[in-house]
Image (cartoon, rainbow, N blue to C red; front, side, top):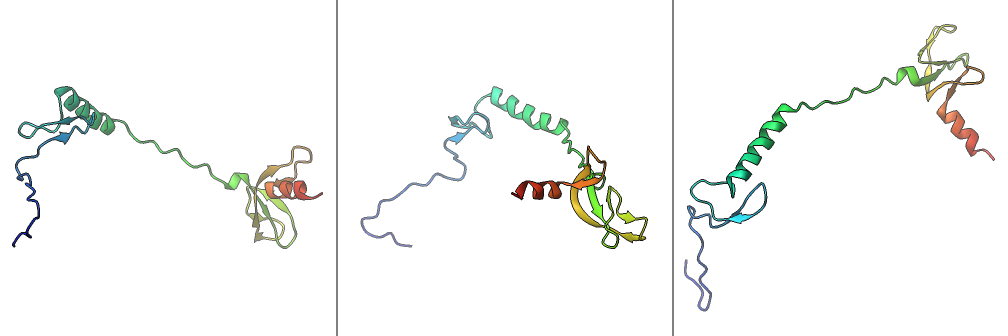
Length: 123
């Protein structure tokens, strides 16, 4: 391949010469000696501790809360509502889900949050 006249010749470093590199721990530029990856032994020890500490700490995922005990269901046939029960004992059919809710603190009837929000929206 011929160089174009007037083009500057750029010297590329050889594959063995890495020049300067950044320390992966402290991001300091340094000239590595041999297969050196870190700028100092302190950074090398820090990296070792980080790798081995991460392997020791287990990841704990919290369990999800079941929604059925907090869900209000309504029978399509008789209109009866229940909290946490999907089967209507009167009609012997499965009930449809209304939404999250619970028993009313005043009358102990099942009330869904959707019902309460609809009451707030009415003038």
